[in-house]
Image (tube, rainbow, N blue to C red; front, side, top):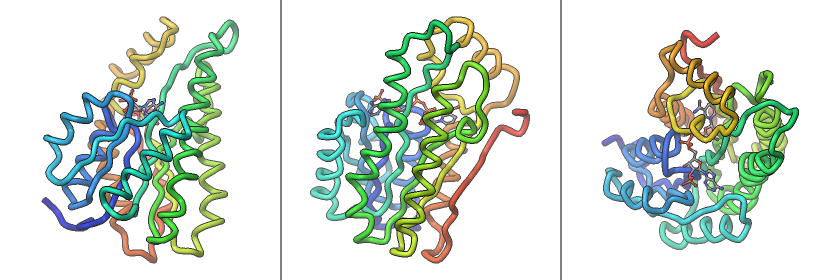
Length: 244
Ligand code: NDP
């Protein structure tokens, strides 16, 4: 176990699988006190046992502002502060614009964009107190839009825009803002796509390359949040080497 984050308090959203789970474990291994939030609490309970350090499982739906505020309050109540927010919860329900089920658009905007904004809003007073760090999980889709990914990309472009405004507002007060933009990572994210051709295309794309693993992203998160206070790593674009 490392000790670079000894005693630091971290809240990770979307920690029940994939990148969030790997990040919660990696930060715990560095000595952080980790609050891990998501809707599938049973999966978080098993993380409590897997984590090398203290981990608090939080029932969290980022689309619900009361739930977000309660998760932040419980984190501070249990660990006494909040130093790092890993704003990771997200869904990717990609498919063609024509004929789309627009309730999927609503879900993406409410989770990826509004949910991430609500979480920053609730956490910011505590992060300002501690000169903390906000780590925003965006995507390569936050830089490049492509066919069948319009709404997902719109949410991730939105995360990037919001993050830059946030950075300009709080950096002089010592709060660092990091945007991380992963390429293809092997997680269950694409399994939720309901449009069969789009889901098949995602599976084909995954099979065509050596995808990143959630731990690769967790390592990048650890790198960003363990820099000295005067070093703000503002953006990390990280793709599989063979992803064009
Ligand atoms: P997963 O599907 O494994 O993880 C998504 C996480 O988000 C789950 O823990 C899920 O938990 C949580 N989540 C979804 N909706 C909500 C909600 N309303 N409230 C709280 N938590 C929620 O996928 P990834 O690990 O891949 O995704 C994590 C982030 O990484 C996302 O923001 C995604 O957009 C981003 N990303 C992923 C890439 C990839 O290739 N995999 C590439 C670029 C970015 P639960 O369902 O239990 O609530």
